[in-house]
Image 1 (cartoon, rainbow, N blue to C red):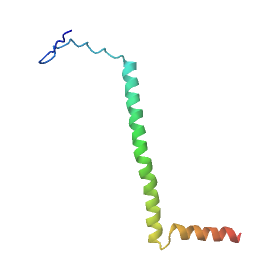
Image 2: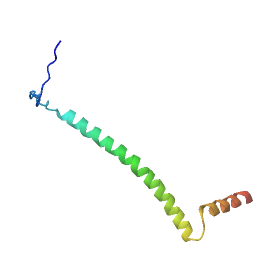
Image 3: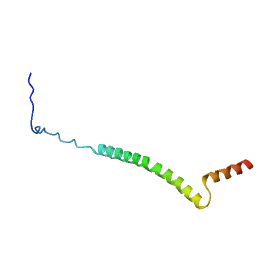
Image 4: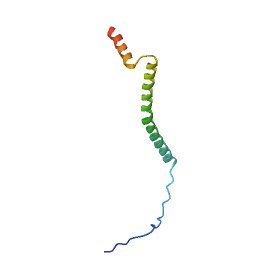
Length: 82
């Protein structure tokens, strides 16, 4: 049994012309891309917003001379006195 080894570039194969998409298919692809983009954006922005809100709360309370722990202790004392 013999094998043939081809050296050099492969012969070019004819490409099929891409099928022209209808307006519905184009719209569907645009919507899918937009949904993926929004999903990725949400996975990035939601944690950034949550961490940013906590950081701003902490900085604001430190500026006023207190902390979240002290604020919660005061709130518990008020609730206990009721």
